[in-house]
Amino acid sequence: LALVHRHLYESQDLREIDLAAFMTGLCRLVQDGCGVPARRVQLDVAIPTATMTGDRAIPLALLTTEILTNAFKHAFPENRAGAIGVRLTVGEHGAARLVISDNGVGTAQRTETSLPSTMGQTLIGAFTRQLGGTLTTSGPPGTTVTIDFALVPQPVENLAATA
Image (cartoon, rainbow, N blue to C red; front, top):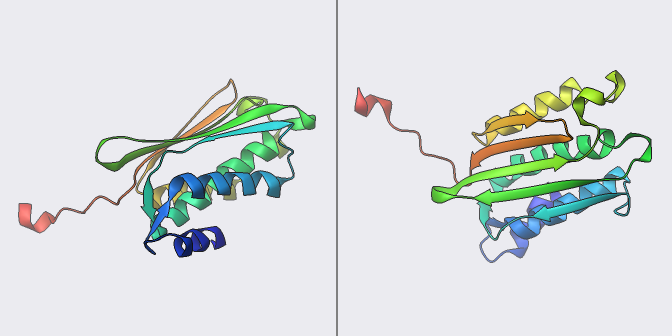
């Protein structure tokens, strides 16, 4: 949350956040916070120049933090080396896709005690819903989490007007 506030205050428009700088900084902070050295697990972040409102950036940040934390903590047991990629693409009309993938052991090979907690899965689902997005997970090999959402919330059509 502090990172969101900092990026809002540093931007020329206090309502919009530069996603490239924000997400790159967030991913590096998560890696540092997990205590995983960059020489063991390489982090490749590719975020285009795009903006998002602060109120939408918060669930995106929390979602990204939860998924990345799971990858750093569980994908590379016994100090295995590996890589994690974070990619955001923006299509027509502000449709966005966030893909976080690792080349780790995959969920099928993780031990029962190393699986992400039910609380973590619940949080990931809640943050995805806050963005109005959909989430898919695939792997092995590794684990890939894909979230499709809109950078700008889609207006809710007035159902009474169409009835």
